[in-house]
Length: 248
Image (cartoon, rainbow, N blue to C red; front, side, top):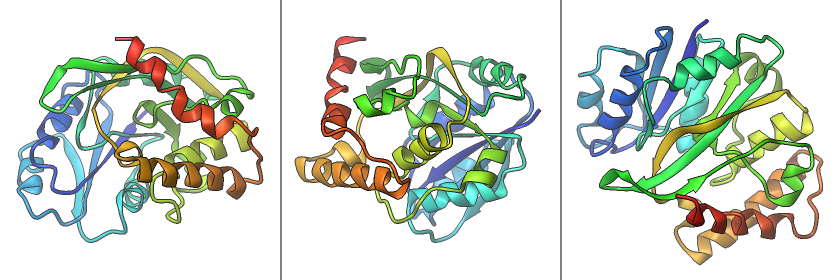
C-alpha cells in the first residue's frame, strides 16, 4: 500500500533539505514524495532535485500553503496521504512504517500521533511537546486538536469529504480535521508517540493580532460545518498549549 507525502514549499532552501532527508530515510518503501513549490526565488528547487526519492514536483504560483496542499492531494496516487511542511522532519526512519501498520485495518480512516516543537537552528532542542492523546467526540468541544503534521488520511476521505477550504488563511487545517472527525465521525486511530519535529513558529501564533484572527477563523470553521462550539471551546484551544511547555 502506497503513502503519498506532500510538502508545500516557498523559499525553503534553509530547511527543506532536512525535510527531504527525513522522508528519504524512511524504512517503509512505498512512499511517493510530492513537492509543491510556489515559485521560490531561492535554490529550493535545486535542493529538491538532489533527492532521487522525490516522485513528483511542481513549481508554480499558488494561492498560499493550503492551495499548494490541495494541488499535492490532486497529484497523489497513494491510498494514504500525509502532509509534512518544508521545515518539519519525521523523528526517525520508522514513522511511516508504524503509520501504515495502522492502516492495514481498512476500517481506519485517519491516523494521528504526537509532535515536538524544536528550535529553528537546533532540531535536537525540544521547546514544547504536543501530546495529542486519545480522541472522543467531546474532545473538540474542550479545545482539543491533533497536530496536523502528524495527521494521516486515506485518499478516499479527501475524495468523499473535500479538500482544504481556501477561504481560511490559518485555520484550514483545523476546519478540515473538524469536518473529518467531528462532522463525518470518521474512524481515527491514535499512535501514541512523537512522529514529527516542527521548528518553532507559525502564522497563527506570531502575534496577538494574528492570534485574534486565528480565533475568529476557528469559530468560522465550526460554522462552516454546521456545528456550534461551547462558549469556552475557542478560549480553551490556545490555553491547551500551555501544557505543551511543561512536557519536554
